[in-house]
Amino acid sequence: MGLEEDFEKATKDALTLPATTTDEDKLVLYGLFKTATVGKVNTSRPGMFDPKGKYKWDAWKAVEGKTKEEAMKDYITKVTQLQEA
Image (cartoon, rainbow, N blue to C red; front, side):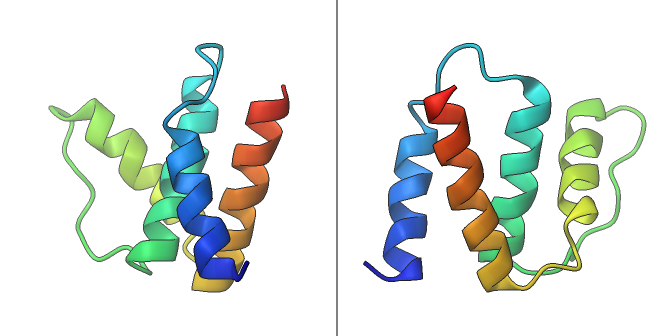
């Protein structure tokens, strides 16, 4: 399979991650997913009344330097690691 197909499979696998998956791991996956599908951060940081949105925005911003392909590969790797844990 190609990178795109592997990424699509990983996105489906991510929906069935163990209940023990931490919020930090979920935020890493979120940031990688957004970078792989949207690219660079294209919104302003949410305000103090949206802490969940702020955490998600920060996770996306943290991986902003990655290319689409790098983000896809890292996402696939992270999902695989979480499934094996």
